[in-house]
Length: 144
Ligand code: RB5
Image (cartoon, rainbow, N blue to C red; front, side, top):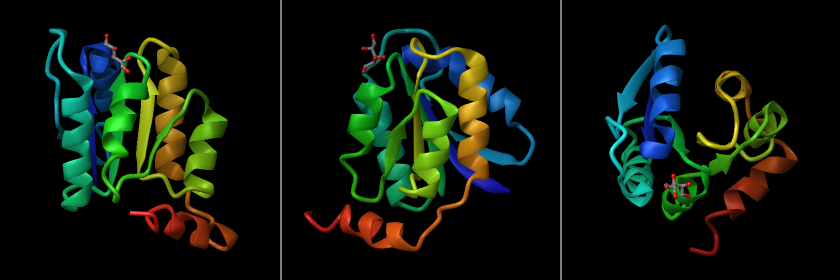
């Protein structure tokens, strides 16, 4: 089964629960929290994702905060992470096909649950195109 890490702050807790439940078959979830609606710092959960991807504990990840912005910024500080904040299915498809994104970030207060599920489904089921995109993706870490 594919190992996928998932993390959220309080703004993404409801989506995390819903997404884990929707994709409970075929996905071996690594739940990095948060585990309730109490206010927490999104950066801690973005960093937890960064560590999980860097250490190879998960091959892909899902991040959710209120906007999806703060938690994706935190995760993208890790060179191994290519987190893409998506608000629609086209973005979820393109972040896989062109950017080989390994983490999908969503805004729990930005999009509705049906769009969130479609974005996750598309993210899981779209392959990286490679070709002309490979060198560009490789170069993302070149400045570090
Ligand atoms: C939390 O209130 C909110 O700031 C957070 O979920 C996120 O939107 C930050 O980028």
